[in-house]
Length: 576
Image 1 (cartoon, one colour):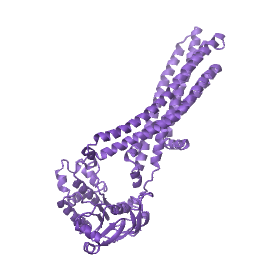
Image 2 (cartoon, helix red, strand yellow):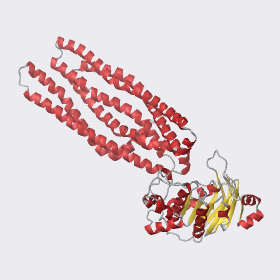
Image 3 (cartoon, rainbow, N blue to C red):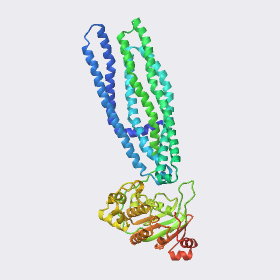
Image 4 (tube, one colour):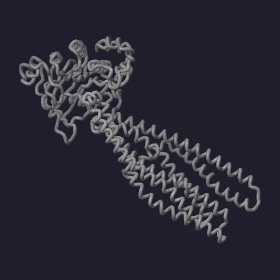
């Protein structure tokens, strides 16, 4: 990422907090100013000692400078640290809000662990660079210049010696900075890889255990952790080189100043008190030089994090619009696919090759066909998880691309193929799509989805925690929760993607009745592989190889379409 873009991004994070950052910087400078006065007070003390003058006042002044400087700098450091946490909080809020609005293809392209790493570890590094690095560079630079000016006032020759040593060692430090940046960037990528492989393992934890793959997965995580360690050590090595260079520069400068300054005292060019004050200024120079080196190293570390955060913020998001963009519609929705073509990426083959069908309104339409026919993709296009490559998709005669996403999705209830259940309680899962649902509406949908008996036997009823991804529920129970969640939205269009595949015969029969009842006042589209579900449909769309092969009733298709007849004869329709 070019330096100009990095600074622009850095300023964007920094800008909302510039007032408090300025306050912290001023307090830090005030503390530094008291520090600069201390060598002058020490010089006055040495001069008075040589002239038998009273020193009590100077000692009190020197003590006051130390105490006041410490207090002011401590408060300034607190202000900056608090602001740094605020910067991280704001960055995380912005990034989380954006990531949850990403288009589905973007999420499918990037591992979830990598996205989570950008929210956690990358934003943590942002904390250092947005305040500490910027403020350290500003305050350290100003204090450095002020100290150099005071040293020049004391003795220009000794200043020249000091600057010569600092420039020599500083040039070597500058050569180290790119190494820090490269090592840190690779370390952050490796940390993201750890999150990715762990997310994969925990996402299929039962499969890992059932396959006896714990050691193999551990080895994969270990490899990623070792890679992060290797790059982290490399970054630490170069940072330690940069850090110790400050001490080296001061020590070499001290020896040079002590030797040359001693000769100048002996020759009468300067006084002993001047040499003492100059040496104090030299030691005081450690702090601003350390801040400048620290700012440079933190910038190199933070720039890698900023680049990853900026990359995440450039990912394409959905523009949802408002669910109240137009007057709410009632009644079942019509659906039309008009010569729709689609492929997931430009380098992949087409999934749909001119798909056309029409669903006029209420009733059930079933989609059947072999695996890979494109049935589930129909639902993804209706929901606008993906955009059609060609053709038109109309809901109520209106192209889905003209609908605000919030309004479109408020019209639809969707039960996914794997019926995901979120960590939380049963109640939280039920009202996930209808947060304003009343207790009466929840009770009604529990009965309709045959969940009332399950809820009664749960230890805490609706407030029972279902575990990570609903792990405390069976597959059939998760499907019923997902169906109840969709029904609670009172949708005008209900999409069921094999919504009864994990149910036993009794519950499947009961839920078929629920779906049939919903189809009287709602448009229901269902991807099904059980013949018992398909025969209830008012119309059946037979798909094969991304095309609509035939449309009709069960009786019509058994008589007129060989593929459907073959599928029906097996009593099992292949999954999507």
